[in-house]
Length: 518
Ligand code: KIV
Ligand code: ZN
Image 1 (cartoon, helix red, strand yellow):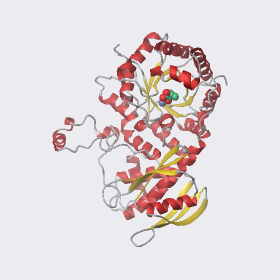
Image 2 (image 1 turned 135 degrees about the horizontal axis):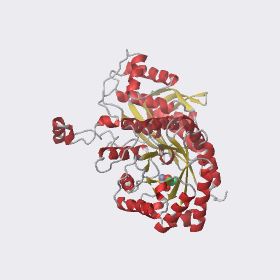
Image 3 (image 1 turned 60 degrees about the vertical axis):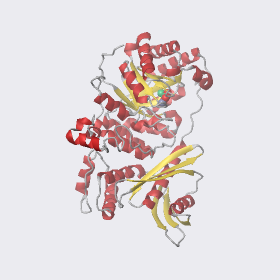
């Protein structure tokens, strides 16, 4: 089936819901708000802000994001039970365009082992949950979890019930990342052809990346007539992640010749969104990642460089500026004032509130005192850190480390824990060990260290260090991140950032098992 309908593609971002579900990714409330604001500004059509029944934190996130988002629909996830739907409806009350996204599994393996429900019970649950959701909003999305492993005839019946009960969007998840482009194309085509009234709803893709096919499958879905794509920034999400938003959007933009569709995304914000999500989750972006990787626009081989100098089109299919990557520019020095600093932040797309601006400016001055050349990357690391650490319950007030030949490494540290100052001095096998022991003493906890990693923000021996720390506690993992010109201070900040995220994770519990009739 050739698809000639060029209706714009709706971009549904689930970084704050499916993305936040990935092992190690935990976001604080303020970080979620910051990401939601950026997504809204970037032109995302629907922001899935959380799963309200899963925790008070998710409920609050959906509630607050509903209030601050200006143009996108805000969406809350819900299973098929009434309690889930009601909780989502309540959280979305303040949204300008609320959307309830309700789902239930439809594949034989999920129905038997996960739900312990037969086909009729599932069909009944679909009808009841979609009808219930329509009491709260006119935008109701229904998803067939594990759709790609569902018996086609049953999938048709499920979608039919969802549409008849009032669903306006039908989402077809490749939950386990099992499908292939041709198969996914065929599933969307089959549903559009066989389900009565399929032209009254929008079909949507939600592809996971277990076989590395999430973006290809999503685009195949678009070619088959899907007009909504669910995706996440940097492709974060359960296991191998979801389809990457930046890849979907740029593929559609660059290959308009064979995919004549538009999106509302301001692509020059993609790089910033990627950096923010990487900073907040602590997940580094791989160097060769399409669109937003550090090397995505670097040309190393002589032949390529020669070609680029003659004509950029020899090796470049899009311009770095199109995705918000600019040539590194030398910037402000220690004599630069507030005005110049604010101009610089504006040009980089950062809008900080008065207090955050003052903190960032103070840290910039400290940095400019210590570092001769302050680059855009330094400013980005500094401001992103400000956003990430700004509202933490545990803060490093001071850290002092002694190490070297002939002395036992030791750290003196003062932490502020919910406003109470705690000072300790500890020795360790090395300076980092001493710092981490000091944090453990000041704030006792059982989490174990899984990863300690240092990267340089820019070149040179005076470069800032970005440190990542991953902690694990009772099966929950979190990653903290921080940058500082002093590597030991960055290590302390990163560890404490991870601890703060652990506090957020502790609050999350698995939702009670679904009882459809509740
Ligand atoms: O992957 C999946 O099936 C999901 C659903 C909840 C849409 O995330
Ligand atoms: Zn998913």
